[in-house]
Image 1 (cartoon, one colour):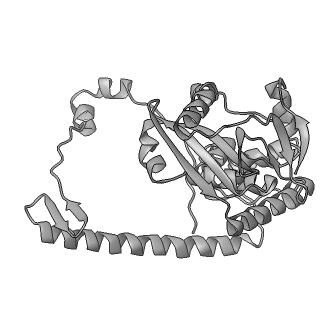
Image 2 (cartoon, rainbow, N blue to C red; image 1 turned 135 degrees about the vertical axis):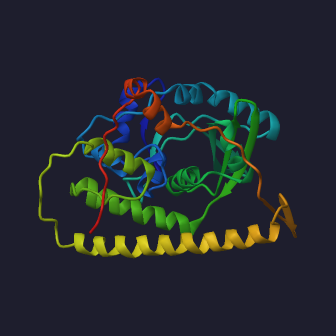
Image 3 (cartoon, rainbow, N blue to C red; image 1 turned 180 degrees about the vertical axis):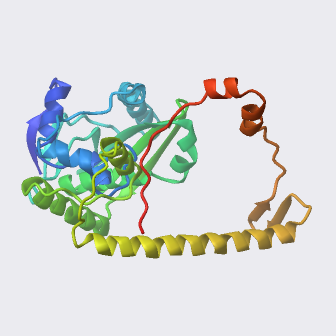
Length: 309
């Protein structure tokens, strides 16, 4: 690796512009379609200069940056390992489109390892207890590819009061897959300007629904390859329906075992069929008995529904 540019005291806007010179660690999950916040189209438009580089400036990301030093100091206190700042945007020698901006480095037995600090909300506690979320696994494996590091320590403050850390070892098979996907994205989509294929991520779904949220009412002839997509849509829809019916059958068999009982135990598994009481709102009755009030509180939602015939 080599130092592409020093980042100490660099304004954030300039840092964001430097990142457009390649693919960073947080971009890996976008390319893999596992990032819930950024779509492949957002990334493509930024890297090709069609939109200004930006970072979601929310309270969550703000305090994530503020608490980074707290997470680092707690990691040092608990492990006794010394974390050093790198303050540079690093570039892979072999794959110059791969960049890395590290939270810190740890030297062990003369070898440089990586340190990453994260914050997470309380509802992700179980995920962090079990291991490292997939998007961060991709990020640190990307970093290890760029730097040649064999290990990453990743620490997280969950819910503001629960500290966890994990060790992620270098995974050559995953790194090879990351390089292949990032190389294809950089050479085909960025350098050649070809629009990327839409993936199934929540972020891409949201992007398309927002960008093309209003129908123009026109009719077009779709490209030839769209016919195969229609066929795939039919096959997948049928598989989903069959699996739902199969799942319902399994659920009903379990219910029949439980009968009037609420909890069933088998080995280390527990099956529950609990009584749930929920209050609902009788819209039909309100419309019938007090139509003026009903209509006064009606709202109109507009969205586009996809159907394949």
